[in-house]
Image 1: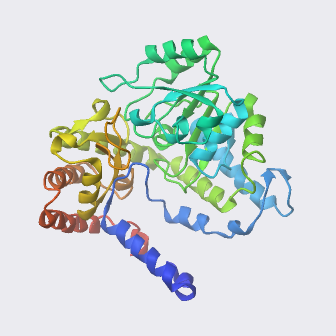
Image 2: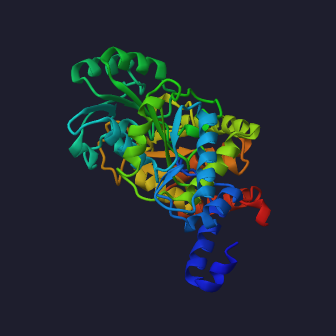
Image 3: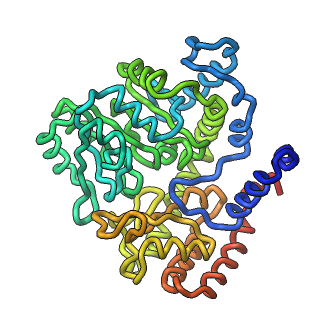
Length: 414
């Protein structure tokens, strides 16, 4: 791998070599990260990166797009099959631009969106005051109950009060299932549009392991690089009646030429997700998360939302006598990568919050199952209990390295 890069740019080659070693020897537990196949990597680094193709299939502003049209068409057709979508736009560069494109397509400045509060599991693009969108649109944010669940009656009451143009669901740190049919009923009563951001759980949805909002909702956005196990990118699915508005909002409204090498890699990932083995993979993600729920739930740490129905856990570590930042840094030393994260109504600051967020997609991709999760759960607890003990963290790191050696990241290259 990287033979030409090694010769032409040894500095970048060495950095990528070190990053590969880090990924191989550590436990990647950030729930928004995964490992793509070599086929996806090959498509991502393909000659499709050479081609400019502003516009859409059959309506390009450049010549020489006949094969690019076929390539993008395959990505669209496979996504439609995966999610039972009427219309798909595979050109968004990532999840945040996809959300912005939807807002600009379906709303006017000043219109109201009802979405979830960031600290309760929402996303920056769902209305955080620090974002540009919050200056253009009126975001109203709902929260979970004290028990950590979505209160659909409260959402309906807020919808009656604020009369949103869009009711938005889908989260970056919420670990429970979503009742899309209930949200659709509420929206229909209010005359609102329905939008779901399934960036984190799209792979589980594609595999039939979680509820699918696509046939029900007006518009659904996702990234392609989390549980869907594709390249870093975004996608918008919508009802046919909104297709022209959505497409126009993406190009020329927000983006210029699409990244066709990325779209080629998306198409490869979608094909992989259509294979029966992907269903087994998604099922194992959830089983692995449940093992960690049991291991971490047996400690003074508090599991947000009462546990998990998907691939992630959000955990308050303050009862263990340290902050989320302390926990992240200690686990880094132990070879376990996750992220510090705010918990609902967190009294601490975002860069030093009370919680951590972790997930199982990447470890499951490597082939790890229940027995490995029990071992990993014990290491996480031990590292947090002894977060200031360098010797303990170093010993765990050596154990992590031994475990990962039994689950090579890319065995084809061994």
